[in-house]
Picture 1 (cartoon, one colour):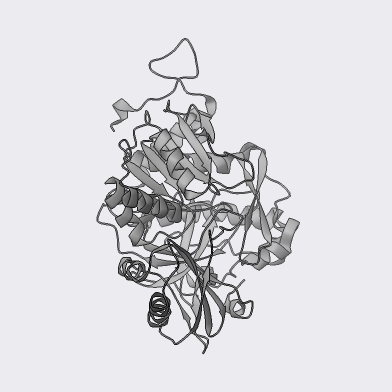
Picture 2 (tube, rainbow, N blue to C red):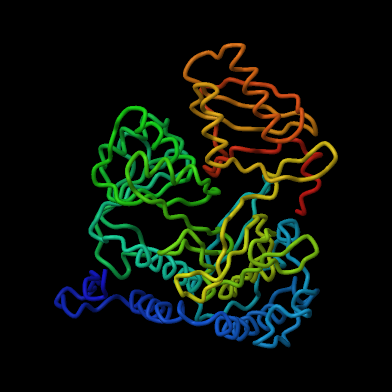
Length: 469
């Protein structure tokens, strides 16, 4: 879609062309204009601009945030040596730090020009919520990256957007969900859009599919596990979603199998994005490849190995972020708890840093009986083999102890002794150890209160002691 075709929304009734957006819309268009150019800058220029913004953030934090007054961050940052030894020596801000610091992490002098302050909660592996504050200005950057994602992937704003992500009790309930005449606040500030429809993620999968058929959307936004189950159901029942052009996935790690299922079921691509409530957008999928581009205009992202050194292309490490524009609650070198693989410079030509894969939460690592952690990612081939052993509709692995794994299953019919034995052997072969495997049969495997679903979980507190919290 060229700029000539963008349906910019005018907020003055007497003016339709050229459109005159609202004040917020004008600010958003200003950011989008800058983002359109900055994406092509070389990596060195992004580092230079990030260093300049980071100095302002750190100076503000040292002056106005009690937590940082007690452990100040150095502001002598060389723009060309942002990830210098001095920077790498700065302490990592952990989830436990945030939980224990409480009000001490909040700025006592949020700049008035940054607008109203709001709060958001997100849960960690301990189940203890983290309260984060963010400003209206921070939300403006969130909106800009939301719209950038739409523009990158050339979505038709006149289309219908279906969203299955709401997890609040009583919100967007079946059979109708919640309907709106636009795609949401971020997009509606600037563009005229088609309608959107939202459904609660706790709705049983057969009802989700029935609802989705009724909506007949152009775009579907949901979690990867939901997309996979909907696609598998459509394949099994021979259902096609005639208008669907694209699936956008959020929140969970995206397994390659999900892309395969969506192509097989609907003939459409999957576009993934990586964000965190407390940190904002981290990375968006490249419009030309399956790489993830760090949104460097809004966040500094480090991927660090076990010694705290930056990972190189092809290496996997812990994701540490510094949102650059949240002056209400600065999170400087904050460890998200995710793992990512660093990518080579993207062939698309954008200078934004590239991540090849987002591997998920640290607590979802398999712990071998001798203490070694292994990533239990199931490849497309792994899943294909698993499903060939038994008629499985849903599964989840739960490590209950150093030598024990529960395999939770939703199955089409009762399994034979031979099928159960084959599944146990598969688990042992996949995870590389003769674990004691218990099969548990459920009508539905519940999601977390946040609406997320992990196909591998660790449920032994002793195992999770190795996680840096």
